Length: 515
Image 1 (tube, rainbow, N blue to C red):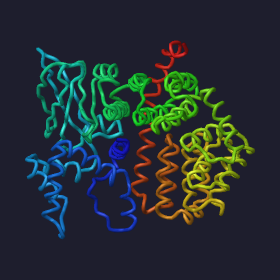
Image 2 (cartoon, rainbow, N blue to C red):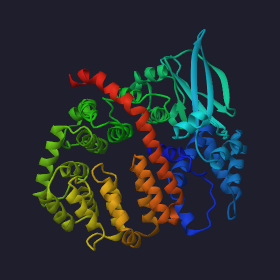
Image 3 (cartoon, one colour):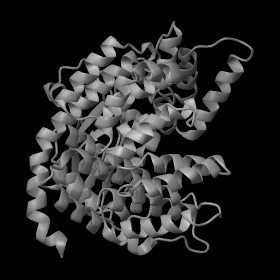
Image 4 (cartoon, rainbow, N blue to C red):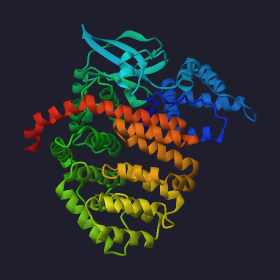
């Protein structure tokens, strides 16, 4: 599911591509290794399987293999076979998702009248670019298998329709408290909801929705926030409804946006209030999970603990979490035993935030002594987490030295570029050492550095990125450069439209959160 959300993010850009994409040069081939080639393809096939049913899907695949054994075949042959076996218009549905770039946004309006829910669905292309999305001049039209379910009804069965037009209206038996537009979370589309519907779903998140549906709903609401259809405060309210969430994938999806909001949308003045809110949000999870692994604990909780503590300490600056990280790090550095790699990366990175060169040297020495690849990269990540400018510069210089393998150098630079404290330092370093960087990193890695600039969020940085990579072209990242520039532009726009709303909400909630 996380791969689906990632692919939807790529497909929400103007400079995306269809699944079927011609490539004639090595650089063009390298560029196809993105969130579309595998992530979107898998998600669309999963949607197809749900649409025609698992048994028909398996029968169709079997028949397709029988017909074309020891021969050549095309995607069209596959769709045609599945259409014949299932009796559904697969051959007309799939080209709209495979040969057409982007993904659809399905706006849902549901109204209860005389014991029946009257549903209106309207589709358009979804784009992160708020102006383009709300202008709605896109010509794309998809054939979308849409499945809905009603909350709070005795019969919560799915109602499925194939949306083939720009807009469609139909009735659903009974009236529920809310309507979910992607039941089962199998559809590759964004869903847009009215504010009252989102609030009603939020009250029934844990009992009314499966983990996959909760993940998809989080992605859908965030998508509406990005284009101004909903305020960012609606997302925060949804997050508050997940305070007792125990599913790691659901929490991970929510926490990614909590980090993003803290990194990009809060001003220096708002930051302390947001930190308090984050600590309040995560307190129930920390109480349940604690700081240390328990005998017999499942792997999901171990990984969830690490993620929760990372955000509580990194975004919420929770004093207790940061104190734990320092103690854990001191204990680990004084030991010759193996690392607990379910938590070591989190502890080290949080401890490194405000640590000095003495801790850096100890971590560096431990990395040199690492006995396993897992431990080696945990220490490497820790070294990339320091916020002291002198240590950042030291780490960047080390990245281009023989002490760091060439395949790791780009990861060091891009990781530091993603840090609030290190972004500008890493960017300036990369520009001034570009000839050396390009020689060491090569094609794939050069593209990764282009993509790393997508973490910037200012007009000035956008112009710098455009100018630099226009003068220093990376052939395997032509589309990647345009995507990075898009993401920077969209971040700037999101901050301008949602930042004031966030500030007002934090001000209004300050007393309640502090209690």
